[in-house]
Length: 365
Image 1 (cartoon, rainbow, N blue to C red):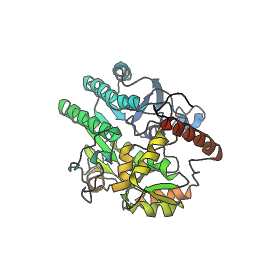
Image 2 (image 1 turned 90 degrees about the vertical axis):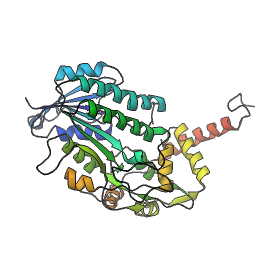
Image 3 (image 1 turned 135 degrees about the vertical axis):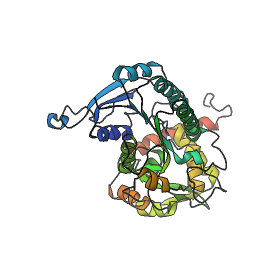
Image 4 (image 1 turned 180 degrees about the vertical axis):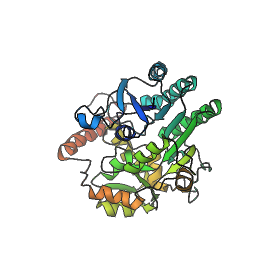
């Protein structure tokens, strides 16, 4: 019997791409996808019978990881590798911020509790983010995995990631027999990436904070999938994929450079105005640009990837510059189509009318 891999968050783009990659991995017999809804991509291979013979079997289980039912899934399929990708950084669509926080934190607690009781679990891979380092004016030039942020994230998705990593460390102490890998991804971009920063770069005009030009790092979606795949299998001789690793492409770009490479004009604004626009975009469900993303676009963040290359044994195929160039050359359309502009304008006007009322939402006069 080969590996049985359980993957959370398969409905998102990164999760579905990872499933496609791990099913081609020699020695993997079964991949179990867990989410509230199936992926929009073809993951079962039934449309191409010839290709199915070369892929591990795939089963989708509709389950909420915030519920104890995930323990039954692990036991039923004899899972030995758990890959936790359902740590979200966005709350767009019908999902509220409170629901996402519950999934990030409570869902992780339930998943780890289930994995702790399952004697057959041998490997745990957790997707995290470099947001755990925060973004502050007095930050060091480069963060390594051993460094602590100057100011701990006080809320939002960055705080969720800090809590998730704390629970993972507790799991590692209780189950020292399990190989645990935490991957702190920089901003993932690519032609099909569905991350907040990718959506920001898709805007026809980029609002920026007046007086700031932050340093940024990117990781291409292809590299993100490959790092996750390598973290799920036995490492090659001389390397180890156990521990915490920063994942980013080589090199650094400032925001103004990125905007020019993408051909996007920028509109420098005072920080309160940009924050107000970001809040309005979240309320109108156009763009979920969180406060930690605002801090990133103000102060920037750069991480050291020496351990990824020398210890983990992976050299990203795309540098930061090349990852952005792939986005620029992909012809990815702007986020706002004409019909979206009309709809968003109506929503903004309605929101402005509400906020202008004396009671913040009483009857119109």
